[in-house]
Image 1 (tube, rainbow, N blue to C red):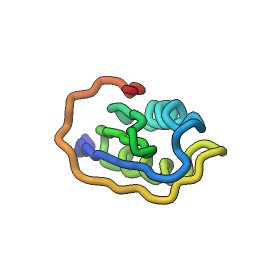
Image 2: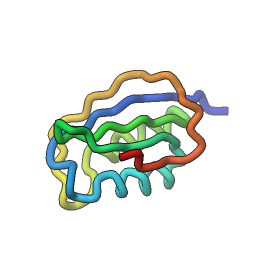
Image 3: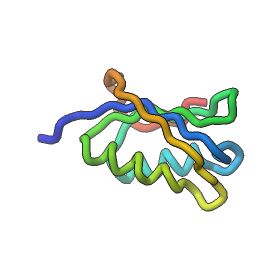
Image 4: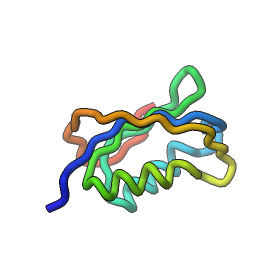
Length: 92
């Protein structure tokens, strides 16, 4: 069984108003990653990702491009405590 990984990821750039959260939700579900994604007041997008280590790593790599109208300039990631998420949801 794969080791479970949990990451808190903050994405900067043109990531609000371009369907980034919905794109992230679809990408996470395709990869079998659970958690949530939300817009932040400072214009970034924050996501909590948990699942098999390889799937989480792959999703973080996917987040570097995002949907076609997005322009990601930076991704910061930190290890997080698993929250026991069973799906991937848009939190706000």
